[in-house]
Length: 161
Image (tube, rainbow, N blue to C red):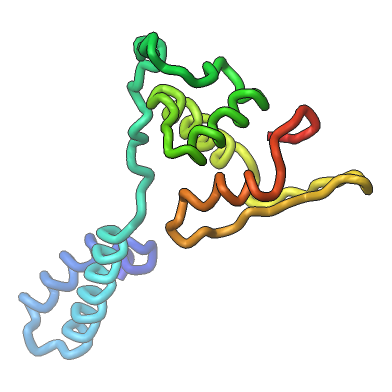
């Protein structure tokens, strides 16, 4: 019973099995064994379905060794997104073109960092003369997102990107 009291169900299970083996007619021990078995199975089930952070696909990715081919005709992405890069990227998407995979990785890694570092909810102050546009869930139609931003606005220096 001591193991049960301190929530060590696996150890308690061994003890209850020993008691039932030595006293097979002990109804109380049989009931406690059955209950302890349920607790252990339940704990094992929850441990099996527990979500763990999988290693990021970006771990070990060497962006510095990725070469941008000389024939890439888009705006180059440095350490930070610029309005020029964003405008070019949106224009490329609109015209069915792609950005270089190095830039995709850079953007995904930057977004991952923001998502992990920022709180779930933030309060923002928006200037009276500013417009805030929230682009929500596109239900798996990711290609709609840049088109929505193109339709709403164009990036400029005052945007907080």
